[in-house]
Amino acid sequence: MGKKSQRKGADGERELAAVLREYGYEIKRGGSMSFGEVPDLVGLPGVHIEVKRCEQVRLSEWMQQAERDSQHFKDGLPAVFHRRSREVWRVTMNLADFMRIYCRQKTQSDRHKTAENGGKEGEDK
Image 1: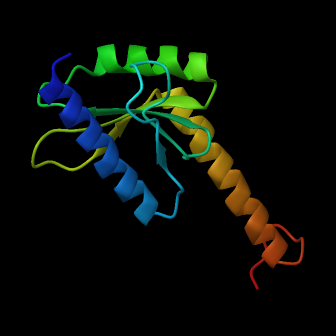
Image 2 (image 1 turned 30 degrees about the vertical axis):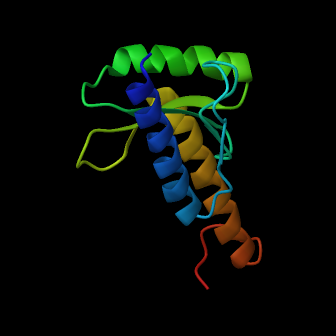
């Protein structure tokens, strides 16, 4: 991989880290070690973050890398965070993995509502 491409990748990691920090997560970069030795970013609980800042989108290839790396690092469900120039960040992950996160969030929200109702499900205050 050329220096320009490496620089663009590192810039993308810094940019995404800043965005995720705005959402309140303590995101850290893996650093400039050899490729594959550390994850791109860490700090999003239960999610392995693969960062791609490219003009040509190759989602299948990127997801395969994210899946391999998430198994290797054991840091969460594989997700590719990607964007092209002048576009917004997008996230790609397997539907089953997304539903695992979504259902977990929904369950936590339901428990919170139940606690607010004094332990009585389905009742309004």
